[in-house]
Length: 256
Image 1 (cartoon, rainbow, N blue to C red):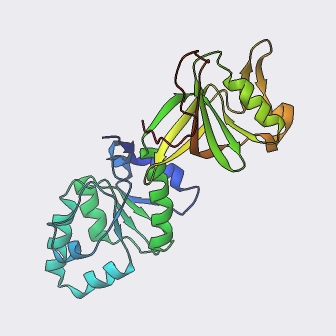
Image 2: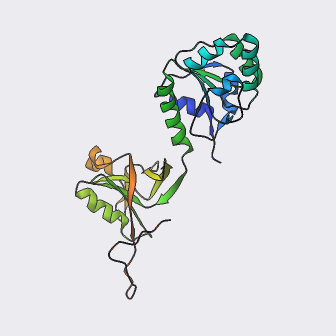
Image 3: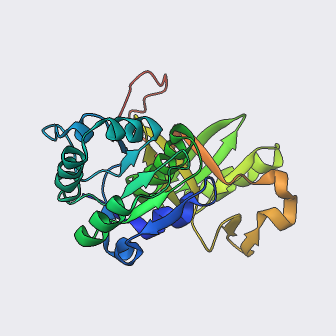
């Protein structure tokens, strides 16, 4: 299963939301996450941990804090102690919740980083889960050229010297946009959505026989390139083979 280090998620999430390290920050570099969804604490605060997934980021919001205050101190400490005994990657306090001394001590003793955010839980979760989805998305390098044609992402595949780049140049002349050439990075998001982007260091560039590597952005302007596109259509190019039966109507659905 693919994992990502908590520290990297925090650095990326800071671009979109407020995230601060409140306690046990020395353990951040050792924490790995393998799930794209976080867990908002509810029944766990009452001591029910049967359905809790300890591998997810745990979020404590204002409602959860209000519930903890209704418990007797002994019961609250027992529930929190059992909660921190689980191997959770981190606890996040949203809605500007202040870190209590009890949670700080338990987090430090169990090696659980505590993060804080003044944002509402939903705004924080959207930003945090968005970064987790990007980092944990299955991805692969695909040989081919990706173009944005009338808003449709087209992946052009084929063996070397079959004419992929030539097709892309003709599309560029007609006002369509280049996403990536030669090798493109393809990631799977959500329910089977494939997103493609150019592979560094050849982003915005194409290799043309007789000319070498050409920077399309410098040559044709920023409107001729696009950073990322959803793949809607895959076109396979191959050299014509006399006698081969070619399917011309395009009604056969094929999957890889």
